[in-house]
Length: 169
Length: 275
Image (cartoon, rainbow over all chains, first blue to last red; front, side):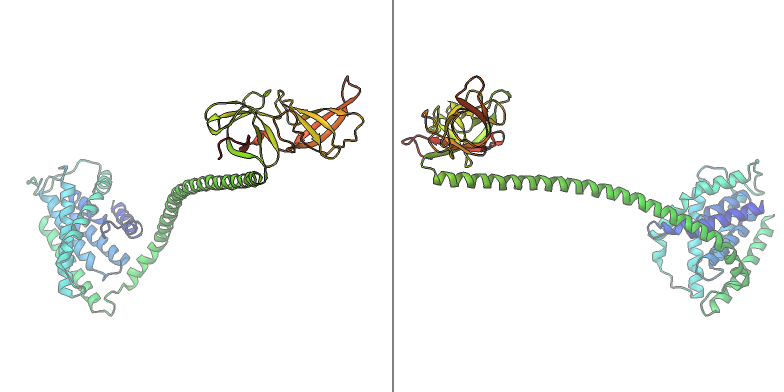
């Protein structure tokens, strides 16, 4: 199962870095890793941080930024998605889209914070305007394939999380 | 995995990544892959290459497809342009030919000792055994039955009926047409009749005369319709007349192509309205 998840992440990042970058919309490129991390973390909350870290490191390698930048952002996303997976009923129909949108915003926030602290790049509030909205929309386009793949991966009945008691949506 | 343990693991991972990131930020390029990162990228490179080539092939296929569509539109536009230019060339060629014909008619009109009226052919006889045309000049223009009709090349026929605006011309090639003629070289007298075909018949040539093929045939002025000296054509063939020992007959190639008339001149009697 771990190998399949690693394969999924590899495939999504190859698609991301080779194919999706050829079709930017509104200056943004869809990031299929985010819905995949969220989908895995909602289904297997303990895997969230590891999957996020792996996907982020892979992106750091494949793209030209400092290694660890996206890894840290996606690690946070995976952890928060895991927390969500432990506390809400994850089979609600709108949860994949809502959680992917939130994860995208969260990643942007973490990236901005890290960039500001480390001084790697100047951070502008404009990055949270229309570009972020475009990124959210594009990432939500990848929700269906990511969640379908994870559903196919774990076809058996899902065990409820240890503290699962809230309805998020 | 319990929540507390997960949180602990998360914090450890965050710390590790922060350490790694700090090391990166201190570097010259703010990026250091290390042997592991280089190895991973090396391993992924073939897959990236294959996927990029596949994307390139798809992209080129799509470009080719859109190019075909663009070329199809361009081709249709160019075809339309060619058709338009062809029509334009045809129209200009037609105008040039009409101008040449009209120039010849004008030259004839200036030389001829008659009053002449230029007319345009507006109709032809659809029946193959008669040969008539309709011109756009009629009795309102002074045209009357019997007026000779000519072109710059020679005689065409005579007016057989008129309306106020049009006139029907009996061509020389009509079987009902008969014109008194003289052979210009031998001065032999005869009669040219139509036979409904291309060449005209010439009859009543004296057997004793020395007529030769190629002799120019002109109107004799006898009969009161055609003035003397209008060119009919050239003697084409000559043979003894059947059943008449004293005559010969033959065929005359008309000077005017009677099947392709477009503009003609009607010769008017002196004293009529001038045009």
